[in-house]
Length: 118
Image 1: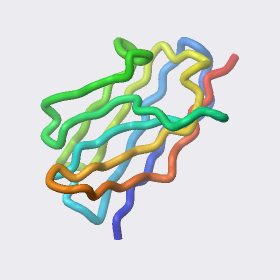
Image 2: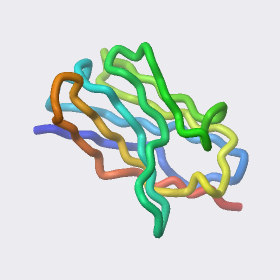
Image 3: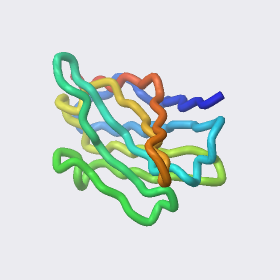
Image 4: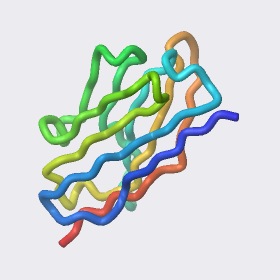
C-alpha cells in the first residue's frame, strides 16, 4: 500500500523555522522525484520545492528561494523541507508529492498544516 505521511507542521511566529518530513512506503522511493506543494485558503496548489530521485538537483519557487531547503534520505525513504525565516504568506497546507522517473505514476500525501502568525 502506497503511503506518503507528512509531519512537522504547526503554528510558528514570523521569522521562525519548521522542518517538514514526508515518510514514504509501498513504492521504490529512490525511483521517484519528490516535491513539496502548498495550498493556501482560496488559492491554487503551488509547487514549493522539488528534488530529483538521486538528490542531485533541486528547484524552488521564487518566493521561497534562500529560505527553504529540500533534501532527501533514500535510505530512510524520507524527504524533508527545512523552512526558515517564515512569513505569514507561507501559511498553507503542505503536501508531499512523488513522481515516478519512468512513467506517469505519482502519489500524494494528505498534507500537514503550516500556520505563520504572531
